[in-house]
Image 1 (cartoon, rainbow, N blue to C red):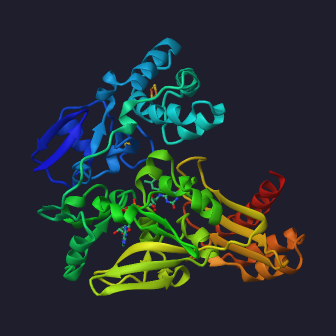
Image 2 (image 1 turned 90 degrees about the vertical axis):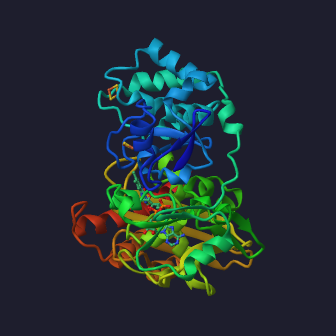
Image 3 (image 1 turned 120 degrees about the horizontal axis):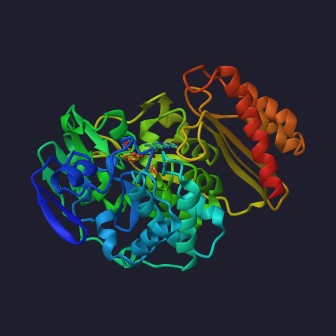
Length: 448
Ligand SMILES: Cc1cc2nc3c(=O)[nH]c(=O)nc-3n(C[C@H](O)[C@H](O)[C@H](O)COP(=O)(O)OP(=O)(O)OC[C@H]3O[C@@H](n4cnc5c(N)ncnc54)[C@H](O)[C@@H]3O)c2cc1C
Ligand code: FES
Ligand code: FES
């Protein structure tokens, strides 16, 4: 039995907690307004609000929303922001076939509240995760701009979810305390799979998670903490990319990580996907890794026996491979803090097939600064152009001595790439790309 609180009503549903929330909403609760489009987090048609933040219901486990407040398009009937958006969409003639519209209303609900008082581009960027097959974008945007201008506020944002108890069902464990987590790690068994946001695992398993024994970390509020110390910032493995991009300490002390966080998928993905999942998934294209590499971050790995710190570059050992032992999880990532930084140049550049929701074909993370004694620090890392993320020490040394040698440094960045040709891009193209991204990033950061 899984209990879900949808649109203010608690439903006890006889279902497997490892099923996608979208299926439970549509099939068990007969709430068919949330649409099944791509099923992979790409189109936004299934967007619902969980505890005040839009997420893709196709990538959320039913079990992980127990205790949470879920709002679907049907629940927007009673919401001042939702009703205003629907009215403005009707007035603007924004609805064609209508398939995408519930998703646009749900993501629009968040977007108009974030964008109110800001420039129109903010609103457009917030909607990057939603597709309209009828290409009705102009009128959809017009309706949302009209709504944003009224500076709407929804009471849903202010409500807090119920405290989450341990949830232990057949094949599914969601611990609520670190002690319960350590117990689960003591005897993990061969089949145990950890799940956090589920945005990689759900897609990789084509939603067939009912065959896996899952340890769901999403109930552990301790894992979502971001703690700032004098010498480091400790980011809990369960911190989402939205938590990271909006954290003031990270923006100040590890700005390239905050910039990369804003580039991971679209808002629905950023609200759900975690930094721990990004690292453990160990994709060569993972956007979280190049920024952590330039800051010499440490991955804090927890097991029932204790904790160990592993340098980020040693943590990922190959595509899809990490040094995590059975019964070990990532608890947090520790990012060293440097207080003496002046004349900072910081950027994260990536390139992929689409502006939003794009898996990198190449990426560059760079942070350059000068200390008060005149010492220059240059940190450069490249992603998606080798089996694992690479630092570029040759380019770093050159720019330390000769700050203006950008062209020569870009050549060294190109030479550091060891790409393969695959379905996304040829090796030559990736080398050109990473060189161009370095130059573009530098220009943008210095001319801004
Ligand atoms: C539409 C879409 C767009 C995307 N865009 C991007 C993008 O632009 N850039 C990018 O880098 N990624 C992207 N991703 C991939 C994904 O969202 C990220 O890698 C995300 O950070 C994964 O986090 P998660 O919590 O969802 O991981 P999950 O799916 O929960 O887990 C991923 C893997 O990590 C393991 N795991 C999770 N947490 C832990 C932990 N604490 N300790 C040990 N193991 C753990 C799981 O067992 C699993 O093997 C995208 C995905 C989708 C669906
Ligand atoms: S169905 Fe497309 S994002 Fe969920
Ligand atoms: S109105 Fe048809 S998909 Fe958008």
